Length: 255
Image 1 (cartoon, rainbow, N blue to C red):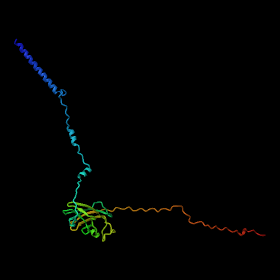
Image 2: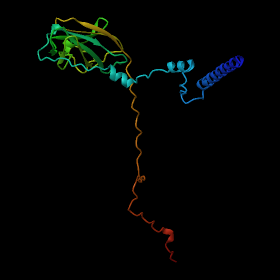
Image 3: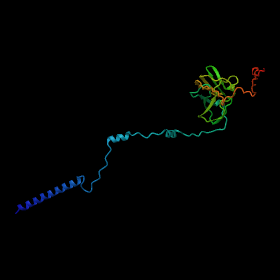
């Protein structure tokens, strides 16, 4: 009688353990199986590979166009202006001459005008307050004091720590003794421009004039030929010619 209850109890324990193991296995399969269960999370997006990252980093950055650079690099500056006259000794003029200019024609001269004054002013150059000389070697070719003309024909507004560029023109001829328009042209070669104000610091620059441009010679025009029919050299005479008189042999003989 005592052996049967023990065997039944052992059987129930084994059955309970087996059911527990089966439940655990089913739960594990449902939980771990990719397509099983309703609580499965969606697959995550694939991460970029090393090759795609390298290609993305190698993409060049957008380059600004020339117009964009000019617009971003240009700064508008509003300079103060003055109405007082500049003193000649406070004004400095630095000349420069662009290359490629030739003899027997006008020459462009660029002048950078500045002032050492503390306030803005207006510089009006007079022939007596500003001197400019163009020379070839030690020989003066053009002298502003001979021409008695101002190198800067118009007043120039100046601001401290700034330079104003003014372009003037030399006619390319010598000044001679009277600075007439009939003076000869400057020949091709090297020249020096010296310029300065009265009491100010002078400056100079060297430049070269190339060969003059050869002008084409005018071609001779052909002489026009006479049109129309030629006229007779002599008009026919309107006087009729005389008829010959009968000869004596034509008269009848008498017996």
